[in-house]
Length: 468
Image (tube, rainbow, N blue to C red):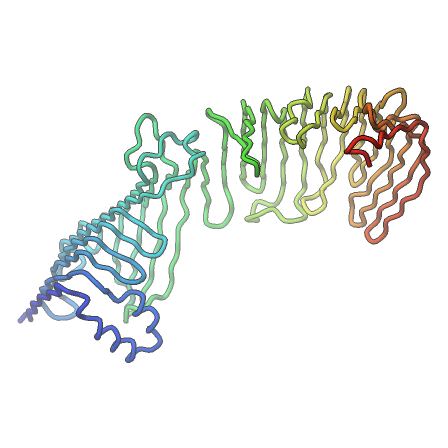
């Protein structure tokens, strides 16, 4: 014979239950803080429960409704929930939940809907969450209009199995999509995940024993990532579709980068990691690169001993476009080109190549600085960089810099500066022409500087307020 239970409960004023919350905190002091944070201080609640049968073969159905529930740590504007379960794993199963105005700490949801249908043995799951939170404004160029908020939709299949005195709940074919909930005109999802899964194992008493997650494929901001359980496997591409980027300094000045091309790519398959970069902009020039890391296929990540190969190249035809990056009043001219190959190991990379510059110039009319006809040649050789030539003209003279730098475990720098009738300042009220030499030696814990300069010509008008 089946047993039957039927209960109904109404609490039109949850604030009146505050004494029960204090009593519960005294009975369970370890949970006093949690009870104080989540015990309702306002709102209404009503529900019903019907149970038929004897354990473990029991059927149940019920409803739960609430309105205006508030607590110090959160709030729930409205909740409607109903469920129906059978007395075995093949009996019909139904679950409906609709919550509005959910707030818990920094989590804010306008609406949360959940459904489960089928049977306990095989059932379908669906979850939808609407939030007023949106991606940052710059993502509009990648994704389209963000609308009034974000919508996440989760679909999947679940199964409940009883084996060897224990229980298992499996989730398969889990798909997740996130994007604008009411976007218009070409809005694309910013998050898509497919083929996810998992398994929760319980013992005979219902206590959790193990949790296992099965990877699938994740797509975020038009990039894709697929990962097997034991190793990384990825194809990620982030590239410019349209739009531009701007920089705002501390004074509020806005600089437009004028980006015409931007591409970052990563590919990882069977121990082969490939990287590629490309950038072109009116205010930054052109840069490109490609690198390859090789490691064994059974390693999840490349280690310090992974071999490294690649190239890096940048070209700025007119350094004047960097005017926004230098202090006010200063101007740059000339062209700069860098090309290098990357080798060695990830833990000890080696850089080989050269950096060249022509028609270089630095000018500040207000300060009387005018360097012109500059030439630059730097050689990169593994852990060593050598300045083959770095020369400027100033007036009728020259300024030359030479030296080398060690970039390994014991970095060191040696520079030699030579000035021959070099015009350091060339204002009407302030003119200095100098000649001389200086040497600089820099090591980890030592700095040495020696040299001698003479003033070939000098004029300082002390009647001017800005004179030294």
